[in-house]
Structure formats: C-alpha cells, structure tokens
Amino acid sequence: MEARATSAVSAARRTLRDAEVALIDERRLLSAAELTELACLDDEQVPALTALAHAVRLEWCGPTVEVEGILSVKTGGCPEDCYFCSQSAQAHETLPAAPFLEVDEVLSAARATAATGASEFCMVLAIRGPDERTLQRLISLVPLIEAETGLNVAVSAGILTTEQARRLADGGVHRYNHNLETARSFFGQIVTTHTWEERYETCLLVRRCGMELCCGALLGMGESLDQRVELLGQLQALDPTEVPVNFLNPRPGTPLQIRRPLRPLEALRWIALFRLALPGVILRYAGGREITLGEFQAMGMTAGINALIVGNYLTTLGRSPEEDLQMLEDLRMPIGALGGVI
Image (cartoon, rainbow, N blue to C red; front, top):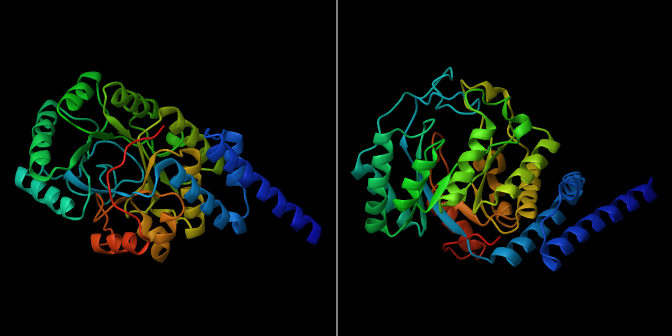
C-alpha cells in the first residue's frame, strides 16, 4: 500500500514537472492529453497544481491585476432559454424586462468603476443580439464613457452579424464579451434556442473586426471532466484576450436551481487548469466566486487569476469593491491594464 502511494506521488510530480517544462521552458500550449492528466491529479496535489499555475501566470503575464466593472444596461426579458440564467423570459421566476438605462445612469456607474482603479467598463445586455436602435445607443455611449472616465469600454450584446461587429469596432469598443459557457458536446443540454456554433462564429467575428475577444466559461452545470478539457481546447483555438471564469450560482426558478455549487478545492483546481491551458490570457474572477470560494477567494489569486470584476454582477451581488481592493493590497498585487500575450 505504501509503495503504491509513493509511486502515485512520484507520478504526480512528474506530471507537474512535465507541465512546468512545457509552459515555462518551452513556452508551448498543453495538449488535451496533458490537461486531462493534470485534471486527474488527486486532491492532495491541488496545492502544487495551483502553485504551478501562479508561476505560469507570473512568467507569461507578470504580477499586474486588471480590474473591471460591469453594468447591466438592459436587464431581463431575454428570449433565449439558457438554463442557468434568471434573465431568460422562460425561467419560472424571471426578472422583469427593464428598459435600456438612461445615459446619466450609465455614466454614473462608469465613474464609480473608474474610482476603484479599474481600466475596463463593460455594458451588458440581456438580448439575443442587438437591433438597430440598441446598436446605435451602444455606439453613442462609448465615446461619452471614454471622455468622462478614461476607461476602456467593453460590450456584451449577444450574437452579432458581420456588419454589427464592424460598427462596434469602428465605434471604439475595446473588447467584446461573448462566452462559450461550456463545451460544444454539452451545450445542447443547457441552451436550445441558439447553438454553440452561433456563439463561436460571433467570437470569430469579434477578432476579425479588430476588437479584443473576451470569452469565458461557466463551471458547475453538470459537465464532465472531459467536457471541461474539451472547452479548454476550444478556447485555445479561439485565442481570446480575456477569459472570465464563472461558477454556477444556482438561481431560483431556473432549470439549474437543483445544482450544488462546486467545492472550493474543485474550483481552485479548475482555476489552475484554465491558467495552465491558457497561459497568456487575462483570466478573470467573475460570477459565483463568492458562493463557491467564500473566504478562500485570495487563494484563487495565487492559482492563476490576474483580473477581477469588482462590485455586483448582472443579477447577483458580489463583494464590495473595497474588499477586493484590500485583498489585492494584502497580496501585493498591482492594479493596471493588461493586454493579451499569445
């Protein structure tokens, strides 16, 4: 028994060492087989896995942390049926549809974001994709926000056409968010009103039109280990600038309300794996970290994370910005703007 345990530990150390050589010495991306091997390490190896991810983050991206605020400028009433989202009009306890926020409300939120030391401000809309009036309003807001706050402006407005992507890029949108959420093989089990391919195509359009791509994941919806690794490969192929890591916060009235949040150790494992799979991206703490990690959130910052959404999310409360800023100060992590490396 003792010999088998010793052998297992030695094998785990070799796996971690091989990943270190690949990412730091050879500076190459890990394959699906290598990522699967890391994902299968015993829980006892998670601290070593997160330590490696932190070293990779510093080697590829440096110590700087990017801070972002997000604002739901058009909330509720979304026609899509994403099973995790309480903004879907098909959820049993859906949020009521609200009109597009007034200009003064958006600028006020942008000023509050700038006061935290953030460099990015993202306007998010609960829609399938923008109609002409919505597109014009977004494009008109971008220069106002930039002039008022100096922030880079990001947008998340659903599925785009080629013309819409070009107009947003020409209008000064710095980064466009469109999450894959999960692997292609699992997507049909959480959304039926649009396809994974439609999301992927929008992500490609964003890059072709010159905007930075923000494309993330939502973990804990019932996907398998293999499907998480599949998603990592699909994100590698897209080569986004930013990857937000969200953890399912089961919302009442949604089909996924029966799911339990990930265990903190499992969340830390996958934060590390996202960093090891995507060494040069801006890896952002996003929704669900409070309920999933609780008092262990600082550990995520030393497991590969190098960006934060501060304040509240779209439909759930986050920590106060002061708490996150104090965490960064305690960790001696400088705040600043980041760009993609790969």
